[in-house]
Image (cartoon, rainbow, N blue to C red):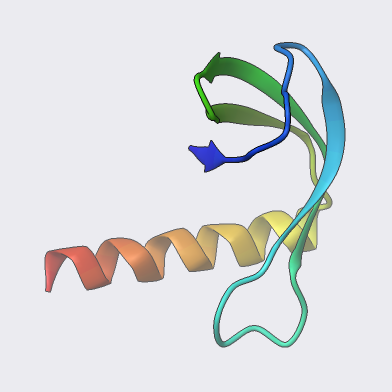
Length: 70
């Protein structure tokens, strides 16, 4: 879920960067598409991501899961 003050429309595609503490560079998603909008929040689906970026993203998610289970 992403929170914004800007108007967002379902179906819009964009490139995005995810800044993760501990990573030297932000994760780059080549194409994300807005899937739902509710008030000032929206959800996205990753449509295009480079394999190396996907591997980093999976590591970040695994690390977050470990923190939640600890």
